[in-house]
Image (tube, rainbow, N blue to C red; front, side, top):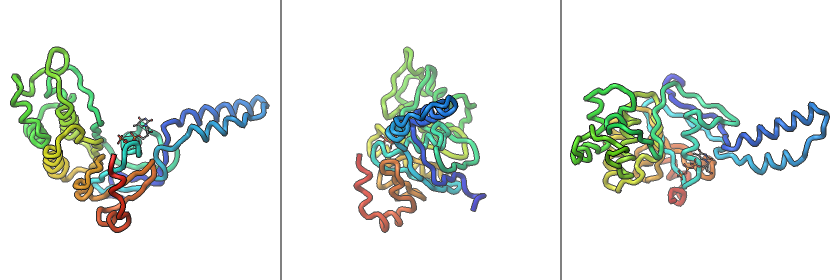
Length: 259
Ligand code: TTP
């Protein structure tokens, strides 16, 4: 049903080194225009350098549902988000989504200013919304320990955040923003198991319950809770479907979740 579909990918492939293919294509066209024979090496190099990072990926995500993207390091999880964001242009296939995206990168960048500014990121302050986000991301406790709470200055002369604080701030920023589709790239990096579990429950499952979201995570517990799972392996779709389908179709899947 198209009206309830928020995101659709149809047979999408992409590579990061597209530019090389375009360059050789240009040389080929120039050689042709000048009546020169084409250099065979161009085809050789094109095949050598253009290694697709994502191959023939298809998926759809309905409004309000959660997709977990799993796979070992380098399997293409971040690249998939980049493609949905429009940063990586597919060489083949189609992508369709219907609006505003909020993206939380693996390493959120922080500019000078207060912690609150870093979360609002230019948006207006709404006390209720802000407080619910801060609570769900477990930042309240951190703020309580700071001399000026969330008005404390970051960077230049201010406090430096720990990796886990930075990760939760990045998540809070992405969640605070109102969007149709949320892309959360490994939001639990640097968090201990207990914090990770709580934030997954309180923020990703509860606070974001009605949001369409894609979460990059390879944790078994998270995959169980997701509505759909995409398991990538070297840019290929190793599996796409529900958790029970995953267990039935790919009983050996856990070996791909490590690393
Ligand atoms: P990623 O898409 O970053 O793979 P991943 O997100 O699954 O890995 P991790 O769990 O470690 O975060 O990388 C796949 C390939 O794409 C890899 O060879 C690096 C390349 N790549 C780029 O060239 N440019 C980019 O901006 C990104 C994100 C990836």
